[in-house]
Image 1 (cartoon, one colour):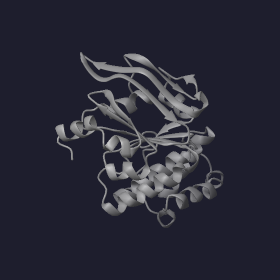
Image 2 (cartoon, helix red, strand yellow):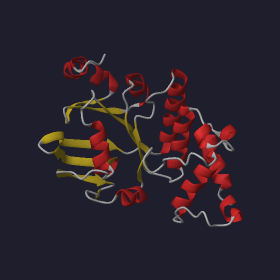
Image 3 (cartoon, helix red, strand yellow):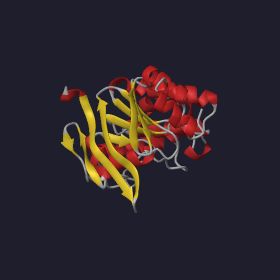
Image 4 (spheres, one colour):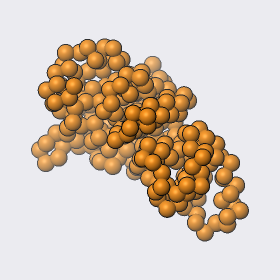
Length: 251
């Protein structure tokens, strides 16, 4: 049913001076699901993300969000419609506290942009919601800590909190567990599962353990094209997928 599909691409293609990075991708993301985009290095995953949020312009093809054509729409327009790419809009301010970072994101949601000139009293009205978001991502104890002083894994949790402040209907997560310790991977995996409870998540992720734990549906890209789709059990046994990973030096 069309109402079940929140994001759809048709024939999505991106060429760079004769090199086809994304080639005719037909992607359907079901509303309320966690959908993983995986594949070996150079498969076109990040390029695909950049096309969806219009940090790159497609050579050909179309993108629809909630049934509305967003091909060519500005990144800020797409974010206002409810599709937000974490670690893009949510880049943190290193020398502000964790609470202040979330508060600024809440200001953006209200349409005030970065109102540094507003009174402390006016800004403190957002504190209650900011603290709720910090609690949701397990960062309550870091509220007064400057972002630059946070451990790496906790910074990623802060970025998710600032993204959640924009109240997105759909979150795009670009390698949320990259470069993390095992403990942080487990923490962020649990956090993604928690925040996905009432929204749609599309993520690029290299860690197949995370993918198997979280994903309802998986799309595998190789050389810019869709190689396979399905749940983890089906995709992980697909001979073409196994060959693509082993052939690219991945286990």
